[in-house]
Length: 248
Image (spheres, rainbow, N blue to C red):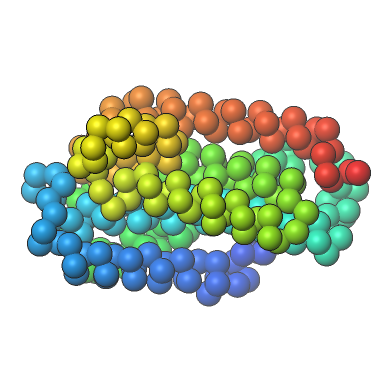
């Protein structure tokens, strides 16, 4: 399991300009544009500027998207090139297979998030209310999306399938999860609809770690995120155990 995990780390670390630096630059461009235009016009929390409010959301959004991308892209590449057979021939259990890919996804997601944070604090004094809450949601959120990426990578038969899930599910759900706004600024209907978006709880809880303020009790948010991870983990393990689209 460690060897497969190490191989997955090498896979994205060898091209860090693409896998880590590019997402960091993208997030900073969002920060530059939105903070410049809206900083003086929007006040979400008392004594918190809009720019400060925006940074945790951008960090978490990038963590989630890159955790998904890591596992899904790795599996589809292995399937398309045929080298997945060298993993399947090993005596790895389906649980070890899952853990190796998921843990690598968590590492990549957190690496991108850390990169954004380190650059952002050069521009703004960002508070840190609770490192523990921030880390919990960072780990749990990236585990959820890493698991979703494994499911997608196993199911997909070509790169277009991965791009479709990324562009039409992962990206819209992350954008509509309160990254750029508090849901309390929305009409009642859209507030209630946002509560069905699991990304909302990940980002809201992660932001709580910075400001100590959240739209939902962070304990409830964490339980929802952990439930989502447990459901996806079980689905992934069932899929891997059956050999679906891997051993056919």
